[in-house]
Image 1: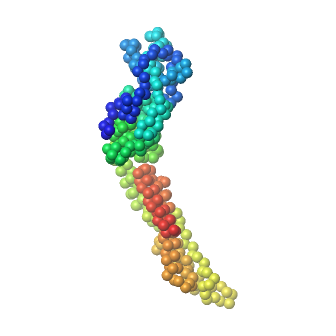
Image 2: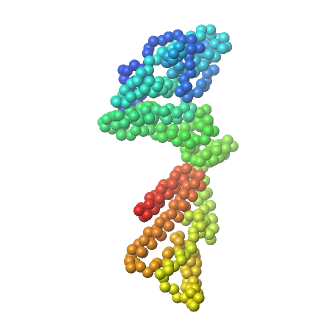
Image 3: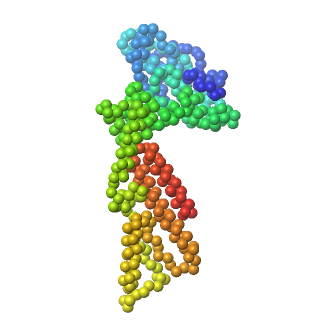
Length: 388
């Protein structure tokens, strides 16, 4: 089973075996009776070229259609119909009939998985385009992945243990090679293209950019993708992976140098701590703490001055946690100390998490931004563990 199919017909035969999906009977059907398939997401490109080729030979490869009342819906052959219609409009041909294979899709059960008539017709539509079209757009290829993935998943889940081992127990390997006829690495690069800006996708579609370059470009934010595209347009950069990696490395280095040059006289500008101001407000003492007071009942100046000085000392030393609560007179000082330590740890980790979130939001390199998000998640787990 672990042998890659070569075209759409083999892809169909791989899972449906000898079960007939499409009849072999060819009928001549008027073009006026052919309906476009609403599920067809492939564009009608290069119709002029196809029409010229057909005009020379007057030979059209049979379309695959499905009977719908007194009409026939096209499963495969939308471009051929469009090309023949153009030749009719221009008076180059006069015959309104086109050769068609009338399909007979039925529900099919594969390893206990039931596929409906509609699913079988959809698979035939995609597999035939994979085998016949020389090029497909990024959007069309991504549509194939999106529509075929749940079907492939149901088949993979139905495989027994030995069959899954043939694919290293990897659904991605199975899906890529069996349904898409590509490597698992190629599938990974393809799915990244979802994040490409439309301008870059168009460059891949017209052949200006390689898909590998597009996958690397997609790791940038939309703004930075467009910035690099403008540099290509001006001739300052080239659409190669090597050039893009060098550009990204240079930008990262510039950002690091800029951070090192930032002044450190403000706490919220320190590169190792959160960007938010941290409060150092002391907690008011509890009622059960004995204080020396004068006749008016006010605390003595020495006590107030001592607290104010402590706060200033903390600020000067850049302590990253809030001023500790003044401990009450309690019977279990060890328990109180442990509780106090946990609260300070939570306070400190919360501030680190805020910093990680801020970095993730403002870093324009998607990979670096993702790593900040991972750090934030780890901090969240630690905070929850301490609270639990």
